[in-house]
Length: 121
Image 1 (cartoon, one colour):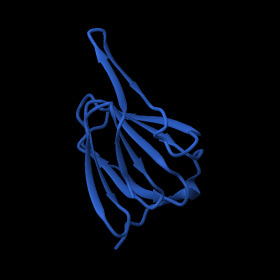
Image 2 (image 1 turned 90 degrees about the horizontal axis):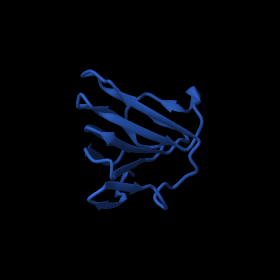
Image 3 (image 1 turned 30 degrees about the horizontal axis):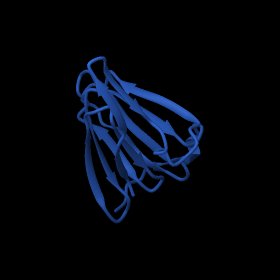
């Protein structure tokens, strides 16, 4: 099931420093960014193996998750939020703000056979 974490952030007059440490439950094998999105819906899948951590570095977006038993919606609108998506979490990503940059950390290298596109009934 998805988990939303508030990442440790240090703020002072110089700005903010956010640390990703002891939160990600996997070794990172792949990092990618999603940005410049129109009003399209991204995602629309789950995985056999891959665990992902989603962090909206700039702007905002909404992530809908369904693990076959529970459904959740999250708004990521701070670079200090980290949403962990487990393999069973069928998800879509939508409502990107014009300036949104969504970073995804993944536990596995890209493998097209790891994707399951059929949503739960």
